[in-house]
Amino acid sequence: MAVPLEPLPPDSPLAGAQPSGLGHRAGAIAIDWLAALILARLFLSEAAYGSGTSALATLAIFFVEVVLLTWLTASSFGQRMVGIAVVGIDGQRLGLWRVVIRTLMICLVIPALVYDSRGRGLQDIVARSVVVMRRTVPGLAR
Image 1 (cartoon, rainbow, N blue to C red):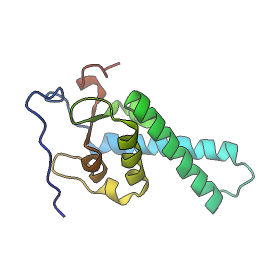
Image 2: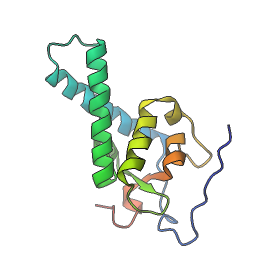
Image 3: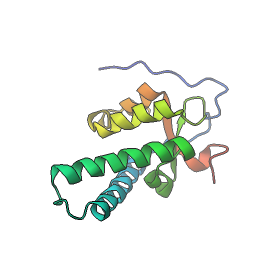
Image 4: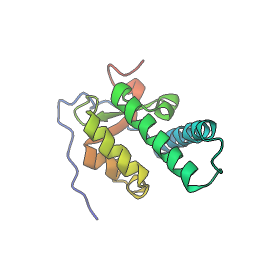
């Protein structure tokens, strides 16, 4: 299914931003998931590992971590570790609801596997966001 792309405005602050690659994204999500697994294991020590309870807790922790940190800092824990950030196509941080929708789509897994020619996942197209290298976006480099 072809999704029409919204071109970046000519005066966009992202004109010189370097898009993140699949390796950075995969590394970030792996780090975030590992952190959620560890936290779920610590908080749910009595739940059998691999049970529905532990799986749901891991997903909930992952969701909350990614939403809060992406909304507040433009990067989840894993994204920060690999040096990427999620910003709107206007270069600004995403509002809470755009972050929630984007993260819900990632939790569904399938949209995160569908990319366009510019490397934007379906969740990025819906949330009107771009994942870029932090060091290439003014104001996010730190």
